[in-house]
Amino acid sequence: MPPTPAPPAPLPAGRHVLAELTGVDAALLDDVDALRTALHDALVAAGAQVRQLVAEAFVPHGATVVALLAESHASVHTWPEHGSAHVDVFTCGTTADPERAVRLLAAALGATGTHLEVVTRGGPPAVVTEPISAGLTRRWALGAVHHRATTPYQRVLIADTAHGVTLFCDDERQSAEATQLVYHEALFVPAALLAARCERVLVIGSSEGVVSGLAVAAGATRVDHVDIDPDTVRACAEHLPYGYTPGELAAAERHEGPVHVHYADGREFVERSGAEYGDYDVIVVDLPDERPDEPGAQLNRLYAVDFLARCAQRLTDGGVVVSQSGSPALWRDATLRAAWSRFQEVFGADGVVYAGCDEHEWAFLCGTRPAPPDPVAHMQARLQALPVRPTSLDALTLRTRTVAPITLRKGIFPAAP
Image 1 (cartoon, rainbow, N blue to C red):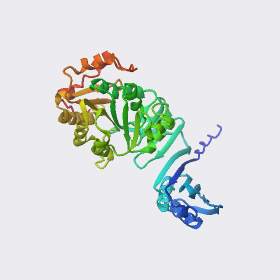
Image 2 (cartoon, one colour; image 1 turned 90 degrees about the vertical axis):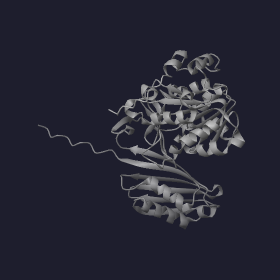
Image 3 (cartoon, one colour; image 1 turned 135 degrees about the horizontal axis):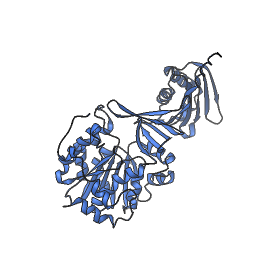
Image 4 (cartoon, one colour; image 1 turned 135 degrees about the vertical axis):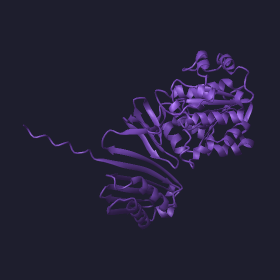
């Protein structure tokens, strides 16, 4: 018999971190010796083996430092006149952490801003393993990766999947090309229909910008969009085929037009901006699921009763707060049950309207005071006058989707299977 062929050698694989550092002292960016030391020390501390360092100073200003590594290479290119440096660190294997090297270098240079992208090069086909609930995960096979970065708040990935271009944050799918409209219409349209008016809208989270567009299409003349993570919002505008375009986002950042983007903590914006921005007809809170197993998670503060109550205080008469509230599936509905309890505490049992979605993992809650006597009839009547016709819901779905699961309506909480 012919000999069994040897298995193919594993494909070379590595991570390439591309970064832009801003707010760096100009004199430091012209100091070749200091740059050499900072790059060397950052690489070594991150586990890399530095074999050679080459540096060149330019006239009238600027410098380049290149490190040859046992794992691959790293470089720094500086623009002192702009207070910025462009950095790349590419390492193969697992002994060195290129992202940590960039973070350490940024700290050594005193950078006030760090924007980085992480590109996976080579290796087997990439996957994302998404946590669903205790003991359950979902694996997403990735095609082309359009953007990969770690911001000060989360790990962000935008890549092709079977659902089209897909956004992941901390390995959790946030939106996908195939289903994003179903999600965003289920989030926003019922709230817009419940509200007495839809002229002033506040959006907290929702990095993609789809809700801002829906609000303007529904008649809003002012949309304040608050997000704590500018890197993610800008990446979404650049790489997602839905939501803001780069030009639309740039205009919104300049506060030109009906949409004004604010990069701020959502809780602080709600608490401090009343005198400047006034109250809202609709407040949309669109965040990843709360994380009870991470008590210090920043987003948990925006799921608290006191934050919901503060949002209620910022409503105009007949205004509505709507929040992403988790999944109605029995085996993962703890987030939804907790949200239901909070909404009833703030708005009363008659002031909470459930808004489901065709995708089982999404459910939303609307809170309003006072609530219409028949919320569903109220929404159905207003649907005809809505300036934009929703794609994924009509009068009948408004009735079927607003029937909350019996676990919420009857307070029946079976043990998870």
